[in-house]
Amino acid sequence: MSMSARLRLHAARLDELRVRLGRVRVVVQRFEKDQAAFGALCGWVLTGLGERHIRHDELIAYVEETLVITVHGLRGVADGRQSLAQFVGEPDDGPRSATEIIDGVLAVVEGREWVEPLLADAPVAEFAIPLDDTEAAVRSGGLDVAMDRIPPLRRMVDDLAGMPDVVAEQARLWADMAGDLRIIGGDLRQCLDADFAGEDGPDVRAYLTLMANNVEALRGLVATCTAMTVITKAAGDLILLARDIVRGLIGDLVARVSGWIADPAVVPLPVLVSRLGTVVAATWRIDAYLTALVTSIANLSRSIDG
Image 1 (tube, rainbow, N blue to C red):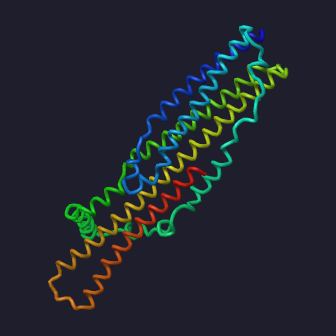
Image 2 (image 1 turned 120 degrees about the vertical axis):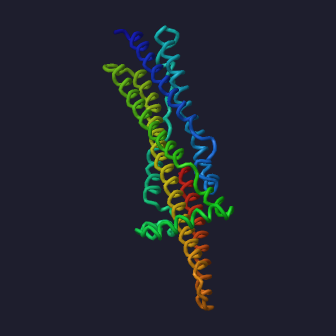
Image 3 (image 1 turned 180 degrees about the vertical axis):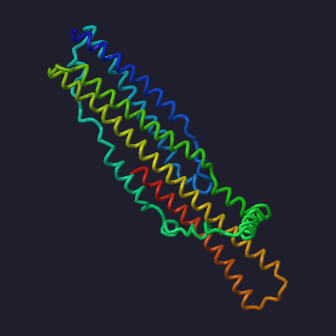
């Protein structure tokens, strides 16, 4: 096969890869434009996720545009309008690999260094202890009463809720993109190896060096997608954990107070003081968990730029 024919075939394959990159960009555009999925309490902290969607789309578009230019240039070389050496010019060293940076982000996220100690050692077990039917009903009923009759409390829990299904979908989309981009990068590498097998001229080597930058860029995008999968899931899981703890505290406290109110016996002052202390302590714990959650999510958000 002549070099002109090889170049035309190679250009056609690159154009097909460009089309596949375009499909990946459509997936990026499906992400939420705001962070309502993470709840009003933490969504404002996670603006970095929304910005990352935009940046990721820009980076994919850049690789896509590079392939457009390459296809056009190779077809010009095949038609004899310019030489391959003229088209390639002087290739630079290419973009810095993102994989080392992303590996550091993953180590931080998976090591849970960003989680505040109060939540890292959260006493979830205290709300998972088996209860008899009466105790379970009282706790559940207490939570329902609090949600119905205390609007500020209901708003606080609503602010924590977010949309877990949307968060899970976002994590899945990042994972899907990582898989698609990994395949496209591998196909590009195979395309370069196969289409120029046996060719070792300086112009071909220069071209392969140039295109290796695109392979590396795709690897960086895969690493970013992988990191964003972990980050998105970690954020959603911690918010749900904090929400369950707060709901448990509220349900337990209201159940206790309801029992105190239903007791007709005269309560001595020391017992009243103790009960007041229980209410104050529960309120403090709720505030402490919410503060720990916001601080933890802020720490996580900062890792996105790492």
